[in-house]
Image 1 (cartoon, one colour):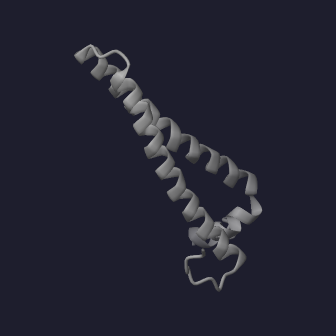
Image 2 (cartoon, helix red, strand yellow; image 1 turned 60 degrees about the vertical axis):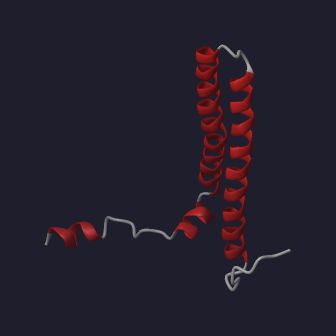
Length: 104
């Protein structure tokens, strides 16, 4: 009985593709947050780790610079992988008959 009363009040869940079409700004903000996370976290972790190693072994900028360089590589790989996923999602939105074949 109670479910029947509240059933009309709830909006049916939307598909993720519909959500992206109705709120593109929300998708853009989420994407910016993801990219920021993908770049900032490796830099923070490896820079902190490199700094701690430099203090322990008294090799002032060696591990810090190595950590920042390594985090740049990791961030680049992570962002490229995410860009490929987004490209595939976009291609499915544009062409629903896309089979996922790799384009050259």
